[in-house]
Length: 261
Ligand SMILES: [Mg+2]
Image 1 (cartoon, rainbow, N blue to C red):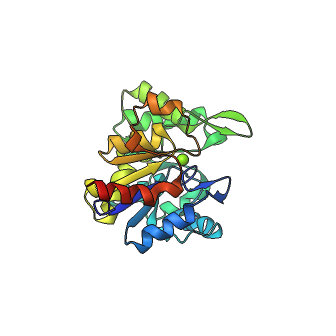
Image 2 (cartoon, rainbow, N blue to C red; image 1 turned 90 degrees about the vertical axis):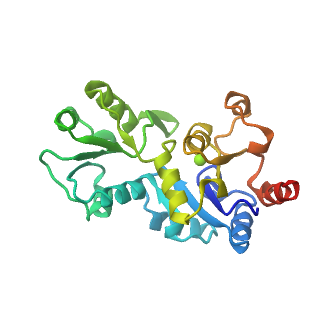
């Protein structure tokens, strides 16, 4: 606990499951806060803002401020604000547009194209327009590169598939804001004002949380809930010290580490 001053939690499958707090998650979060540990909750979710996520978590009993939550979208806005001299073409769902109100938008030769989660609004003419912006020099920014997602027991093509098609067609590489890209993790660490070695990442998804933590040079713990499958331990070479069977075991595990140190 002494060496760890900040924890970055994934949300779904790690702290909550099926709209409910996982057993021990509420107590673990409040105990960490009491001990003065800084927390950040990160998510690739694009349908909810940090304020909405804070309310959603509040309704489950968590006391998490919007400032403690970072999403692929909030980090993207921060990224654009840090490049405020650049013009941006937004190919994003209409409900996200108000969040991007401070961005220098254009419909003509943008410096950046932000593309994400348009689902059935993706069409040839839009993709071809983005393709031409990119070949004229624009940089592609995306929230994530998931090729598909699950809804109603079916697989649905996700925006990552279109990002990859545009990368293939243009020979350019998109800047990814969400997990497993290091951007979201690094912003979370920077916002806590901590050094990477003082921060621990905890998540249920080996390919986004654990791989993302590793990409960002951060320590991680894979939790045995949500998307966890026992086969991941071997496939991703997760050692016994990097595995947390239940979120309720976290405080004991951190205290044990201190004793061993
Ligand atoms: Mg998860």
